[in-house]
Length: 411
Image (spheres, rainbow, N blue to C red):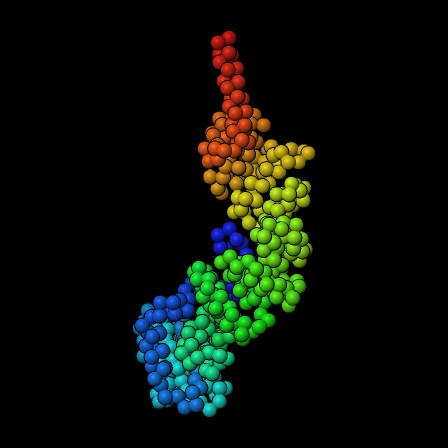
């Protein structure tokens, strides 16, 4: 349910939206848990001291739509309070304002959970009607699995983040997916160990959830626990042998372990399932390129640039192949590929040198070629190839200058 995330140069795949019309919120309520805001602390303190018969309760976080007018926002707190007390007896619940547009509430003594759910839906409807705006809500109940009483407000904050993926008028009950989203948010913030804890808690609720297993594996991979990552990916593949992101991640693990043949095997399998994933095409093209299987690499690199026009690496490798790796060399097309690569990454010494060579072979823009060749050597002074190309281009330029000088004297 969350976007792909990339960490440094290890491009693991995480689950996307699977085609559903969803998008992550601009801000996450669960971020308040990292710094433990005063409002959340106050709610937790009041909940800890509340006398709750039977110890069962429901916690909800409510937000009015961000597009609501300033005037409506100003009266939101009063409306919320009025609606809260019209539905719930003040002896049966507590509430706190989290900010101008969001509130948290806890209530109990509703006989059965389904009765409590009905009250919550009624409260949502009353607030929405009174304010004439959409209401977003995340809900968490207690008892729930192995969570402690003090965990529940945090679960409600995670649930409203989950609900926000679906728009401004949804209500979601906390579940394993909520923990997946919370873990992904922590992953995005580089809090990998905390993300691991979220994924593990999610798996306590849904042990066969492939997204959670895969996400846990990705976290292990990013922190360098490669064997543990591999075990998680293998668990996921045992559940669904055709889960393309997991197949790719196993291939990546083999690449990290320097078993390129196995990596290629898995990547080809992933490609066979879905030819429209950039990471698969780029890595497969890259590994085939490294093995000097130029003709096999080229179609995957072409697919990679079709899927992502911002991949300087794909353009560069295409340029290298077209420049001098095939029986039929094509310096003109190679130059076009290197040109794209240099525009995307002006400090790419390989592309600068390749572009210079492509122009020299076409005997055009030789002064620019010389400049690019010089820059490539400055960036990688130990490259014998770059030095030789620079020397050849310098000699061509010198010979051309000499010819022009002779022509002028003769005239």
